[in-house]
Length: 443
Image 1 (cartoon, rainbow, N blue to C red):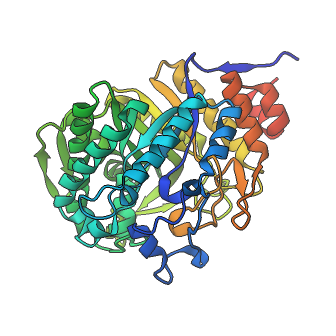
Image 2 (image 1 turned 60 degrees about the vertical axis):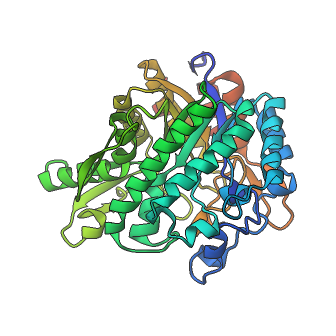
């Protein structure tokens, strides 16, 4: 039987994504380091500790693994609390460490894709109110200028903020991340401050490095009405999509901050401040209208009966929702980068199926000439997953926290085949996820 092969465009970028706090270890000047030490904040009392040992140099072997697997890019972040541990005091040794990392990527043939803010603040900024304090906008711009001035010769693509929408909800609505508040009204301050920080950073980067490409990475989540024929369910699904998915990228596109409960605000210089859109996608919800849930925009979310869930029931596997989010992102009229997409599965039973079904949707999108330029799987090696600690295992490589030993999961081999051939095929499905054959490659 002849193989069916789905090829991706020439020059398509294949990589994995990581974040400084989650892989480096011992980020002692960060607000999250303090947060971990508050009882009850992290699942099973877990600590990040040495994490994946990157600050001790183990990034070298992990970059080797990525290069050997055929990846041609890697997304990582730099840690503000390491670079500016005290106000206007710059740690040049930390910046040099990041220079060595970026050089290490380039020496291995991987293009760096650098995130400037991935959830964590220096303690001294956190103690001044963090993102509730508009002064943080100026401080972030100053930090960005310092970093890009030091590293810009090694990096052409920058993410200003990673998932500011998700961080705002976790920190000020659900209370599961710093600062641990449950006051949705605070979003009316925090989210505009984050948008203005992105705007300031965008212009600062281009002032220092005019040819740079700069964008946001947004946590997107599919919202479907639980009862499609029931108008209130359709309304609340649309409302939640607007609140979570749209506020940040639409503001960067149009120059106007539009939020429910707040007058529209035109921000000078904000329009067209994304040279690409970073789309992070993990799952999709079905939403029912519920007047008892005002803090959740009057929506009660659930997965569909029969949905395949990850190992802790946190995400449902929904590749069709991924396709819909890519289609939605087209309205921004900029190139789209899949900056995160991953699955927690310590046994690596579901992950091959996840990869093949989700990448099939990316292939569909590029064949409609949608501007998808690259894909970053989350993540290269198991790491510390915020309030979920070490209970989630997204890595292509399994990590033993005690010995720091890495072992490749079967999905690491599958993803390497995909990267090296720039394709997915019926042969891959037959070997790694044969249950997909009747649907993906019938006949």
